[in-house]
Length: 151
Image (cartoon, rainbow, N blue to C red; front, top):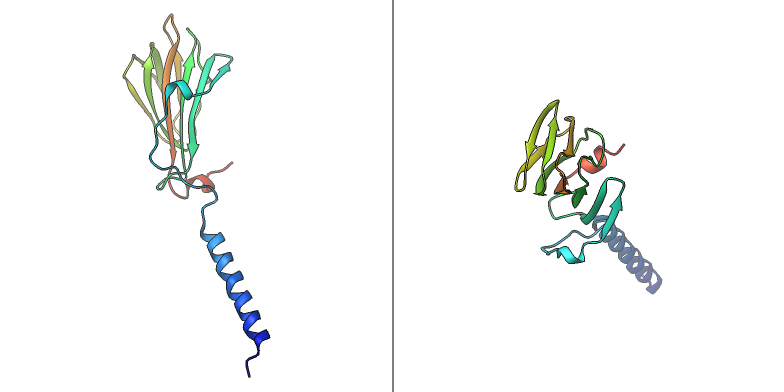
């Protein structure tokens, strides 16, 4: 014979199970939907070599993480030494003249130029002009890659 107590325990267990399943399936962080970013709303952070404007660093529907920022580098400086990392990135020169070094080969580029940095290849960028240079950096982590490549 099924008692009220049995029904109550079964109902509580079912609700707890459904809650646990829903929680386990929900993303840790909600993903970004279509949006816009106004230049005047981007927070400017000063750096030793210029400045940085962080636009976003978040999940999307198809990426573990999308990071977009704008780097401004003072004349004859670089934001950091040449390096390599497993995520890929696209750099779009906004203003100024830069030299892009990729695996030892250097190319001079101006506004509107696009640079693709492949995974684990040595690269660096330097402002070679007499005025500040700014460029957009778009980095992306495909599904599963963020957790698999954390150092």
